Each structure stands twice: as structure tokens, then as C-alpha cells.
Image (cartoon, rainbow, N blue to C red; front, side, top):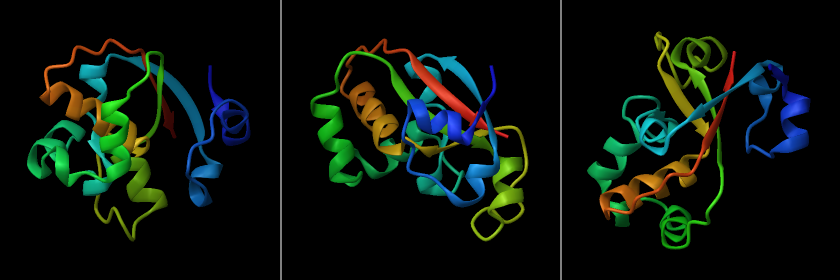
Length: 135
């Protein structure tokens, strides 16, 4: 099931626009463990969410992510991602020479970082994670 950006916006309000509005989004279902193993746009696709949080520490992530980690609700988590190939094509100013099929979270870094913080604290989260992959 592929969704246009307009269809995606009916169900979920990602904080993205511009060239991302021209993409088509394919939903994937992931585990928390797999999702925090994706790359984060906070590092411009150079680190996974897990590695980023381990490097900066729970207190080094933005306060909103820390707050999410403290009060993470049960239920699904929604993220938006693109491959490095896609980001290199639509955002070369940020992803110059980026290539490959690895997914980079472009919306949901606070939520995914909160899950990584919770993993560091030995919380056992089993939320379904829906990742909408823009192509």
C-alpha cells in the first residue's frame, strides 16, 4: 500500500515538507529494536538512533525527547524515513554524496530517541513501529 504525501498527511502529521511532498510513502512495520537501529537525520545519516543516544547520553538529546522517554505511552509509534539514495537526490545540500539503501529517520527523531533512552534504561518496549518510507 503506497501513499502519496497528501494521503500520509490525512493520517499522520509529519513535520516535513518541500521536496518530501513529492515522494510516495510505503509503510513498513518494525520492532522497536529495529527502528532505533535506523540512521537519524540528527547526525545527517551518519549514526543510528541508538548510537547517537549512546554517544550524547540521555541528557544530551533535546528536552522533548527526554520528556517522551519519561512518559512514553503504549501504542504505535509513527516515523518517516528515506533511503540515503533518496536524501542524496532531494537534499544534496545536507546529504552530499549520500548513497545506499539504509533508512534515515527524517521525522520522528524525538520519538525514536526516547525509545533508545528507554532501551539504555533497560525498559522493555514492544510498541509496533510504523515507518513510512519515502521514495
